[in-house]
Length: 118
Image (tube, rainbow, N blue to C red; front, side):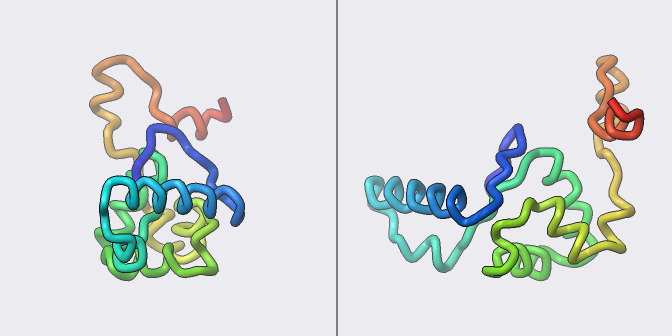
């Protein structure tokens, strides 16, 4: 899992293939076995999606969640969309994990922004 600070919206084959090609070229340049990409496929998500994912993984298991996400038919989906589709029961029960920390520094959490329609 590659976690980014912002959503990359890597939907569609063009962007995803370009990223995979860049990663492959960099791995070759660094002398890393290209088989790593086959044996340990990656998925990209934002920190916000990762918070939700770890909560779903806690219930469904990392292998179950990640095998579904790296499947050819769902690689192009955002992680959030994949979780809502494949793990509805668990995904709807997720919550913002760092509310106390955000409150302590006086920052509004992403979930609150969405709930208030901002």
